[in-house]
Image (cartoon, rainbow, N blue to C red; front, side, top):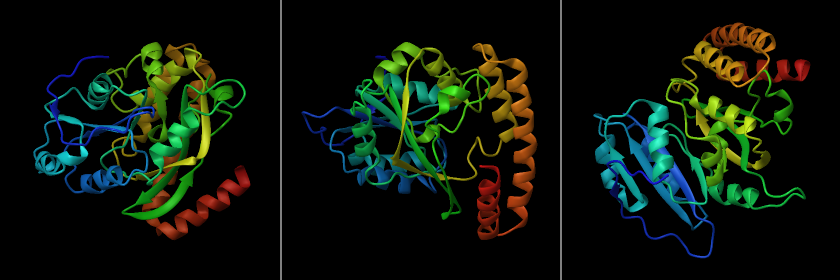
Length: 287
């Protein structure tokens, strides 16, 4: 992973020595309205050994100017057309030099200790060695207002033969070796290259650990949340392609598409407070 494409150096101070280097990556296209919040959350990180890489897909809305004004936070960045989200993510990973790699998206923001808690979890030996990757809990926001939290599933491996359980990809931090063994993101998946990557990571025998101390603040309305049907179709295609149970996989996908269609209709018709209460009641009933 040595390609650097059209990257230019930023002005971020050198990372602290003596600690594992963490490569934090942002993929962005035309997000001038939300990117500054993302950048400020990177600035507030408590962990001192971070390189921050930004891959911009040729934005035209002021994003590039915003990045230039915040070069003191950035280690290296580029702005050039790419082949979509997976292609941009691959550029970032290939430019990374850290022992650990993670992402923060341009609509989202990090708790101040995100990198610190992620590195602690990645270097903690639970008795069977350190994990290959870690994941946490996803705090969902609608128009900046907290809605609910999606808890990570510690028992995820048992379910990977027919679905991708709650691994909360934005919270994932992985060792560099995970990309070397499982590969980069498949650009053939336009909505869920992250789910396909997790399927391949699991197939390669790489082990993840859930740590509830790892949190991430996620905004509703991004690319994947607007294309929920395609999310489940592409995920099912990936699982079956990599040896999953086709009948169980497609049955699960169709049920989830129907469920999320109804869920989306409900979300559009009631207040956020009412919607959150209904979700809580439903979760208490269904588990």
